[in-house]
Image 1 (cartoon, rainbow, N blue to C red):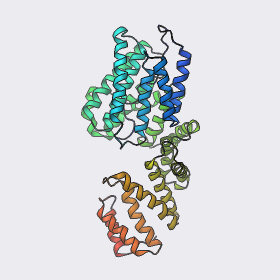
Image 2: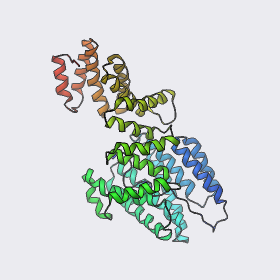
Image 3: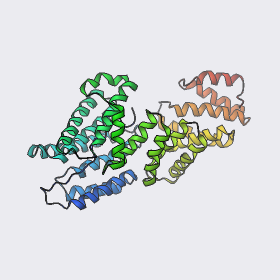
Image 4: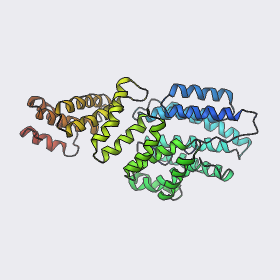
Length: 382
């Protein structure tokens, strides 16, 4: 479970606390700027912005919460890298502790409930990604309770519906797709997919601080679960209009065309991702470059441009060997097989045989071993 499931982003809202003598207009402006820097993959700038908020508004949990959100997006761009997990958990624990101190003094403080709920939701999501299901379920339950309590205090809050939308949708969909989760759903109320979609769409159009996150959820869930590529693209276009250099937004947009086998259109996005990775733009790491080169290679292969296809698949193969670390991803297995086919097309039989033999050393995927054995006997022909 690699992307946002039912335990994430229960809040990003900030309400005005008149009991403190703060310049809340300035606070609001700084938070908005920092959030936009996160989605723009300007993490260093975002951290400086939130450091300023922590300094100028030390008793409010927003600065520390959004610093954790910055770390979350660093993790999100490379989920296989667990080196920042402990930092993320520690940051969230700081937010939870601060919120508990506030709630000890005022049990109806909306900000404290929101940010505590959000922190529990974030922590639960990463725990779920790391397959620590029981702990994830406990955090999800506690986080959801906080969101409901905050809604009782401030029912006109639009942004809180992000949490409801995420929950209602994924609590219905995830157990059906991932049966391992079903035993833990006894902790939670029943989900409602259609209700969740409506709530997410409402926030995606009307949210104050959660608008972008709601759109990203809709982009992903329409791609992953609803299999509605046009609807996923609708939200992807909206995201990329404001954040054209966010590789996650771009990837999902490009994948909608891959899903439809429309490689000429998909490659427009993946070539842009590849070029940005070549230039070293923030966030465009080896994983995005590996995926982009794979789909560019696939488009050339579909057009029988064997030399260009081999060029990009060799880039993808090299990056897969660096990134997989013995896990043998689908990218690697498919790429090695395709390279054998391509070198047969180019009349370089010795190289083709080398790749087919390499396929047999890798784990089986989609009949890859049978195909490799077939092409070892008879050269591949388009």
